[in-house]
Length: 139
Image (tube, rainbow, N blue to C red):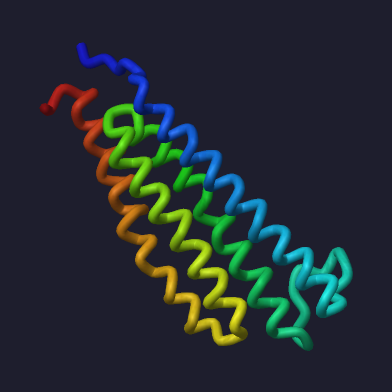
């Protein structure tokens, strides 16, 4: 039977998850500042007359849409490969900042500046799949 022991290096995974939470908070603050600057009152999520605000909101919303999957892959994949998943997770976190800042230009195509984050995310997926396969006894 396969087992998992959480090693000391899992601390890197924990710290990477904290860094990701700080990034989410930062993007949320930016939406709040943009909401004030462009005078978009609650409960409006978007405003057709304020496309720049919409870009701030969308950058944050898109990150939130993938965040649960990111955390799941980080925390599970990190059980077996803590250093690799931590580095991959940090790549994803940094890429989301580039993504957001590209979006903030008002040209949504500029969000692609953060597309390198897929390298980090798919590394997390690979580490998590490898863990599952090993636990099933296939290697």
